[in-house]
Amino acid sequence: MIKWGIRNRLIFSYLILVLLTLLFLGVYILSFFYNHTLENLTAQLLTQASITEKLLAEHYNYPEKKTSIDDTIKNITVNTGIRITVIDPDGTVIADSWENPQLMENHNQRPEIISALTQSQGTSIRFSDTLGENLLYVATPIHHGTETVGVLRLATTLAHINQGFVGIRSALVAAVLLASLLALIISIRLAKKYTAPLEKITAAAQEIAEGNLDKRVHVRTGDEIELLARTLNNLAANLDDKVNEIIAEKRKLELILQNTTSAILLLDRYGQVTDYNQAAADTFNIPTDILGWHNIKVIGNGLFDTAVHEAVETMVKRTLDLKTEFNGNKHVFLVSLTPIIGSENEVSSVLAVFHDITALKEIQEKQADFIANASHELATPLTAIIGFAETLLDGAIKNPDLSLRFVKIIQAEAERMHRLVKDLLQIAKLDAQDYRKNVKTEPTAIEPLVSQAVSELAPQWQQKEIIITIDAPPKEVTVLANTDWLKQVILNLLDNGIKYTPSGGTIHLTWSQDASEAVFTIQDSGVGIPAQDLPQIFDRFYRVDRARTRSAGGTGLGLAIVKFIVEMFGGSIEAKSGVGLGTTFTFRLPLANLPNKLE
Image 1 (cartoon, helix red, strand yellow):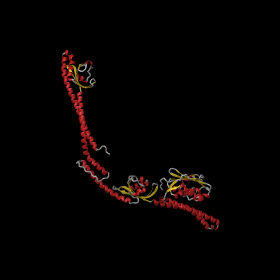
Image 2 (tube, rainbow, N blue to C red):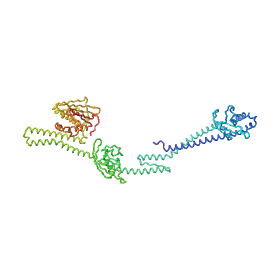
Image 3 (cartoon, one colour):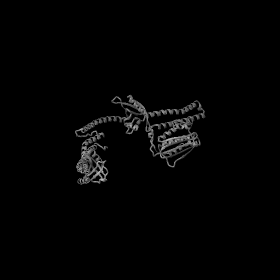
Image 4 (cartoon, rainbow, N blue to C red):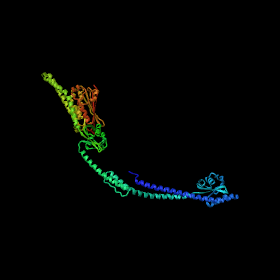
């Protein structure tokens, strides 16, 4: 908001001009009055001094009359009110009409006396301590023939001059105040007259700046202000035409962009975002205020920025595979970068079109992983089955004991193949992003799932005479998860403990909750895991001891499935172990009253 506008400045300028003029005029008048009055009074005193000097000259002509000088000057003072002092050339006061001359100090240093003796007359204004006011002193020499026999000094008070000065000053102050009031009124009217058209132009300009391009201002002053108003109207009209053209072009571009399913970013030659479509906003989770952002801040990938600069430099269309991550989700895009040539035959912007091929890449990678892992893991049991089958065909089938043994081995290897295929299918299902999005979560109590898992695996732990203890909290602990998948986690961890715990060992299950999550722990007294293997135990197909794992019936996928499920529900899992010290698995899941998002 403008607090010191043109109108106020004009009023202030007019007022200051008037006040300064009146001030200088008043000072001049007061000074002229004072000086003129003082000059007149000085002239009167000098005239009186000349007359008095002639009267006193007779006293010096006749020595017998010299003693009556004091009476003479007192008589003059009575008639004129003027103080008269007669002083010898050496400064001794011989007569004074107001004071006793014998009590008065020597006057040879008084300025008016010195001037009278040296320049035929002298004047001075001094403050009188006796009277408490300023006095005007005039002095002239007293001549006897050609000889200066003394000095005649006349003095009078300046009170009447000061009174006149104060009177004139009061009148001038009143005149200044009245003139200032009139000047203020006139300056306000004049300022309003000159600023009203400018205010109309300013208000119209503000409306135009706010988008009202139909606004026009009509001013008739016949001067530059009217020319300014016409110029503003022409500017608004031209701007309106240009804006309409730009809006039409923008609508065409928006129509194309918004009806394209691929994400599109329009970048300037420096890599900053100048436009984007709704598909880009949805794909990259773009806020509404990214215009002007650099592409690295939006995409978060330096390779893309490098490709943009290369497209600007070479003016050639480029394509690249871009791997990036948004909100924890990995994406793969086939990006097409098309440089747009401007009017100066240089790249003004780059059009980036993103084709999301994440699902396609994911399928390809899953298929490749599945084939590679399945081929590797199925090779051993298939080799064993083929080998023992060939042995049977070669004649071992005729030996009942040997054939029975070989058939049991073939059965065991076939069952291991079945478990492996089942786990591979389970991993493939969990890897599918669409499947994870459709997994429904609900508040799930842990205790019933633990009871079901212990019951289902009872034949295994009872056969090995393993003691299972459960330490359940007094209050039910509920997490936000899928019941079937959470049960699978508990089954896999318990099955893993049973497999690697020797006969007669123990397995302890316990769970609790803190402020934000549930903590589940399963501890066994098994063979343990070497410290160097702990970081890899959740990797797919990783085995600490492959021979021991196969003999126990493990596929190398159980713990990978556990970790995948726990993290899918926003949790975490860790393992602590040592050779011969058993193993402790602990996983944490958010409580049911907290938000959770599937990855």
